[in-house]
View 1 (tube, rainbow, N blue to C red):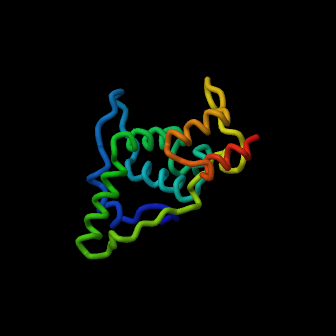
View 2: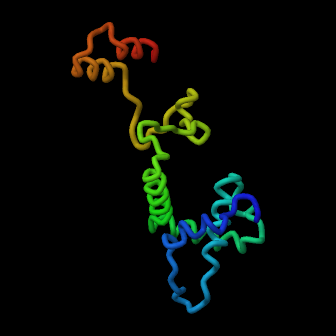
Length: 151
């Protein structure tokens, strides 16, 4: 068995959630498990689709399966089923939530670049002061400090 591929036991757990329907063209379908292994290989390695190893078949096919299954909610159904199974065994602590910061992208504006404003102009300091007053914020507020810094 290769890295990033499902074991027989894992495949049996999720097999029923992976849709199997005949292709409208009459051609035989690709092996569902092989397509899922290819998807997992891409997700685990972070490689571009074009770098998918040939043992999974054409990268375009694996990519198409990924898109179709994602839209159909197959991955959400698999995760939900696995969560239910783990929860019944008491292995999930629902009070703990984690976000992997390695995949949270910051916008260019977070690094100091100008924000793109499509079809509109930037707010003037006068407009910003008016918005601060309308929101009930006084002159010592952060709004006013920001306006002074913009000049």
